Length: 622
Image 1: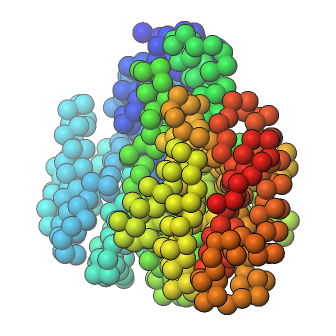
Image 2 (image 1 turned 135 degrees about the horizontal axis):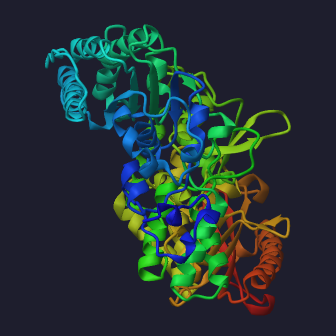
């Protein structure tokens, strides 16, 4: 079979778009993908660039295709796969112009996601040693079965560092150097680091001067410096662990910010479009379906940028494959755009919420267009700094979120600071869910709030939601002494309850003709058959000082008195003008909205009132 006909990157090589594609969701074995007709976006042209240095660290968020990159390198450099080179790489970019180093290494590969994180520090050491020894045994069996004569290797099951040295001493007698590939180098350490306090103690035991992880990387450094490991390529999620063992391994070149590797993992816009065009054709949809599906995927999955000076955002590949499979199989979009395999990223936000200033940052992000400005992204920072140095600003916290993929680069401001943003709608949903749990920790309260929110988009009734915010949320704000006493606080309360990315494209402060509406809920194009409404809300906030009353007085106001207060009336009238204008512009943009329009105004953290704007600008105060 001509595998070139199913490739993403060079449509001119074949008519791949005319065939039904197989999507490698959950498959990270490069040989399988390349030889069995799976969809693949060619990144083999990056291999010559990766040969520029001998020890490299490449960081990307989890489920972003790092393991496939390692598998690509493994298949390319493995001496035992020389006879399969044309089969695997013949129709790929590197196959047309291979480097001199192709198929010239023994490959030793470790995967630290396989290390068990339960038990004591001694249990961790044993689990790590077991993994290293098993990989050494697999290495020996593989190359012996391929006809390579290796001198005996002594395996010590209670001392894998000895086993490594024995293996390398054996290999030194052969003609081939070793290429060490380490996948998810920080996986088990990160799991421990983000646990409860006693687990943080275990983490410190791993990375202190005599800790097993630091010691292992000292060994790798020593063997790399002496050329027993000729090349090392390491993948991970963040530099935190490596920073904590920096004296153990400080020779890796960090390539994760380099522009040429921005798309080493992830899909480009034109690649995603090409796939959608084929699926649309297979499903016999009209051409307009391509733009609709692409816009949906862009909203939910695009938005990742890993290098300064670039303007092409990258799509999360795992989420794209999840979408492609469903779209091709059912000729319909996935009901839930967030793949459950990515939902665990919410634990990173939970971890940040436990740290000093972490909750402030998360709430700020939901309020301020999902952006944060920091002086830089930290390349070297350890967990000790994050846990103990309360004098720092948001740099450490925001950098941590960047590396885990729940923030991404958005450029630089005029003052030269770095702008980080929440990449897309599926990640926004994780923030909203975390903030909701922070503010309403009781599940019963969250259920009541969501039920009140349903009345808005199912029936166009706002009163129950206003009552809930007034009686439940405002109590939280007052008790926790929040500094956000403004309309952003009000919007946060409503957003966390109304947020529904299964039915809606949620947009906080969408730009409408260079003006901004506070909150829009536009029904997803594939959900318009449901009996629900599109929603537009403008928020206003009147302080108690502006109103000239105390909190106790505000609580006792009857509704007619509340609505007739001059400041409240003015806020509602101003909001109505904005809502009418935004509503018309939304109707002009989409053409088929069932738009429910509201102005919601808060009086301090005491009262909430609203005005529903009916068709043609008529309004009703409730």
